[in-house]
Image 1 (cartoon, rainbow, N blue to C red):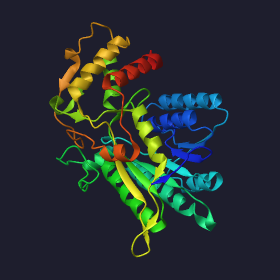
Image 2 (image 1 turned 45 degrees about the horizontal axis):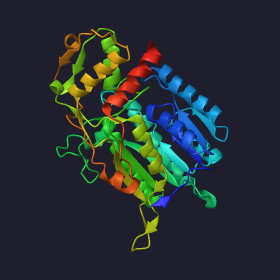
Image 3 (image 1 turned 90 degrees about the vertical axis):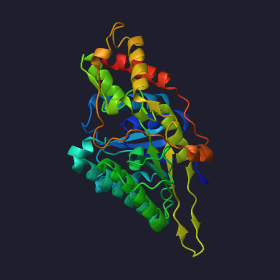
Image 4 (image 1 turned 180 degrees about the vertical axis):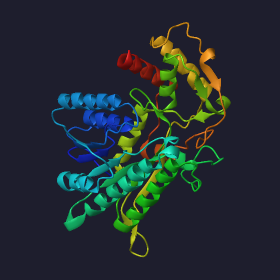
Length: 360
């Protein structure tokens, strides 16, 4: 593994107004100074843009508190090849972290175009920019880290999911695009010796998260007195991972690039790795909802006498969903010493407190 010191480096983070991206930018500003960060986000309205604006304002605040750091934000699209090429040629990032993507399993069933543009064409643009970053003897990108997803495991029956498992049976276009990202990165690693690491994220949650995620959607509905639907009659398990833990894992991975080396034929072996990044501890959805309701009452988002049973409905599984996601994270622990630390209750407590402050 090639160690990378992020201090005094330029880091390019796509999706920097997104949930994981914005938290990663904040963490790098706080812990890796002096550092220069270039952010990109198209600020699309897939969900409430005011949350993205709030995240950007938190970054601006953080930059003002760390004068030895620099942050430049581009409002633009990953699929805009000219823009991506210009960012790479002007800023010459040493590390690129591609977190921009059209997210969501169910949305991909009705809006496939968005996934092809962002997740395939957009990622191709990043790979091409990384490839040409070495032109004319330049040092180029030392490490490309990119978001994959636990969705690639599809209908695999064996749990916990391991990166050694075959992932050839996606059950959504979203999952197919993420598997494609891994294949494309592998090809570019092999052909152009670009060190790249893919991270398969498992159900990330926390303050200022994505409103299309279950815990956020449940909260919105309960507040409006609507009924929440719990899929697969509550027999769902998810490897919920708190965002601060995820960001710590990403930061560690950024600092350890797969090593460039040649095989017996003298040609480069692809400097390529894929890791699961999750909690290694799946929680039953009904338990999750139970803790969420307790924390929403504690934060005074909901009244103490709220009748949850009247607002809960157990329903069948949705298309594209899987009954259990559960990560084998032993490789990440072995290589980077990474282990999530935040309990589900602590994480949901912080979300409930943020929700109260943001919306009420």
